[in-house]
Image (cartoon, rainbow, N blue to C red):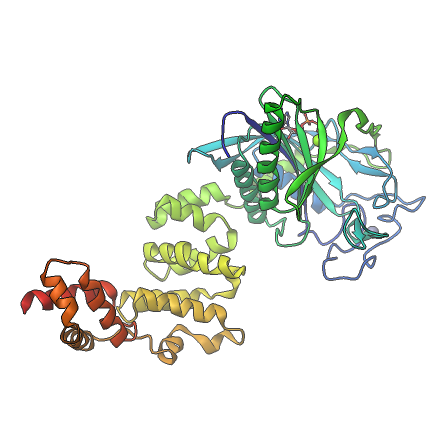
Length: 477
Ligand code: ADP
Ligand code: MG
Ligand code: ZN
């Protein structure tokens, strides 16, 4: 889907959902497990006469993010009212930022289409309040009625806007994954919560007008919508139909985008400075927040390569999630670091993805135990994978499924040398046809005999070792 003609820029709404209270009131942010409209108060319901009070921690978090995205922090920052009417916005205006956003001129490194490190510029990072949430009775176009839940109303949001530096849907996806990764490192964001990140994607073909696909919450959805847009815009261009600047909606079920409005109908929000909030001098806060920034993914990746002697690809994979990175460090301190990197990045992560679960479901102690059994030749690689799967698929108490117990219960202990040799001898004796084929010059016939050995040892022989022994035996006789 690459090609030199594609231009993409993203506007990403990020909920600072690790905050305990909302942006301008004391209401809880913990609405995901709550009934609708149980976390509201006169302030976030926008009742007349109420006043917003700035959540200091939210500003700190916002500065933290802006710094981590390499932005310049404005000395003084200011809030505005963005006026529009919508049922999920009870004040009929949103408090947001406009011409003095908190941070400007940042960047994020991603792995570009060509595999090289690529810098994506960040135009701005600003703070605003989240509106409530509409819940439609049925699909958005068929619903007889819609309900509104104000629990989300007044949650602290950041808007992160990129320059049009992305060149393919895949790069857009890499950008979003990296952004999420950084936000989770900063401990301001939990990407696992519904609606935590919502993305507007702007896309055009060189020389054409752009379409803005609004409000997609999954990274995969963004990638798909953009791929669809490229095909649609290219085909329109071939037919001589000019793209107009417009807003589109992504219909996830049909996997297409549909036009909502063109720029002619663009809203005039009548921005003006929010009179109930004073401008904030944030310059003085920056040094303290900066001093407390944690190690970020790029730095951690470099350190992993230097400190543990692992491949860059493994380091990239291990640091792409803070929880995996922490898990790896615990294991690597007590096991061979390269073996640990390979088994966590290549095997464990794959098994977790397949089951759509996080690494919290696996214990570093168990990983250390498995690696030690592998190293000591007590289990084969196949056996180790089996142990990992058994533990992941176990639903009860994890202490019941220690690797040692799994190996015992499932008979996964690697067959001893004598047992493998005996199995090889028996397999050669039983496989007259394959032996004849091998002698006639068919090297592949050996695989059949190895298969018999594996069957006889119930998969507990190391296949490479079995292969070597079979060959040795055949060449002896
Ligand atoms: P608006 O105020 O209309 O939303 P902005 O200039 O703020 O427009 O840009 C919004 C987003 O559109 C940014 O993410 C920017 O990178 C992106 N963008 C700008 N020009 C293009 C383009 N030609 N093609 C695709 N995206 C673009
Ligand atoms: Mg826009
Ligand atoms: Zn409230």
